[in-house]
Image (cartoon, rainbow, N blue to C red; front, top):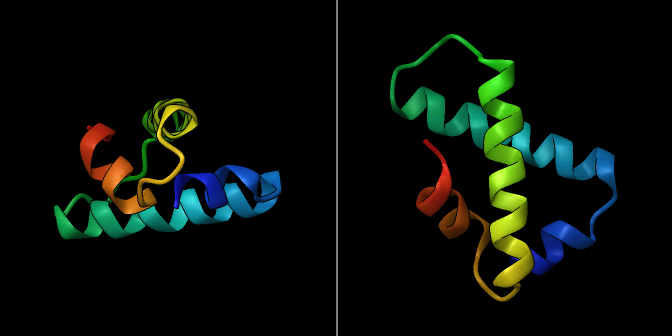
Length: 66
């Protein structure tokens, strides 16, 4: 859930966000990693999750990542 993600330590959140980013980029056949976009999307998802703790992280990502 979003709550579990946010309660994780910073290193674990970074690892999870990196994995999810790679997963979605691969599903869209986008092999180039954009560090600024990653940082922006991570911040957006974290802010979204702060308001919706019981939502799944994957759902939050799907609704907010561009």
